[in-house]
Image (cartoon, rainbow, N blue to C red):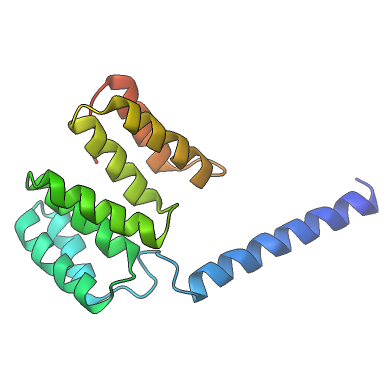
Length: 155
């Protein structure tokens, strides 16, 4: 590799690192950034499949931290599992208004579209996930498989 190519690679990697650090320090929506105890309790309740408790914890989380996309997305997930389709749509859209490339929110919204018979919209979400997952991600793979099967998967 010549020196010019090496310099470009170093500059690109540096720019990617700075962009990632800036996203995290500016309130990125990672589950570890600015998570509330209520969010953590909500995730634990989801993992235990206690969606009513999860919903209560996650509503408390978004009340405390209204710009936490993960809380909104998980609240949508719990609501969807409780059969509250309209609320789930609203919560997923709120997560995506905070971070339009929020991968869990996109994945869950795609599954909700599948569950409500809106295959074309689910495929549109898959395209958005493709852009959000530059080098691939589990959310994209999961939704792609669910679309191929013609139904919602584990999410």
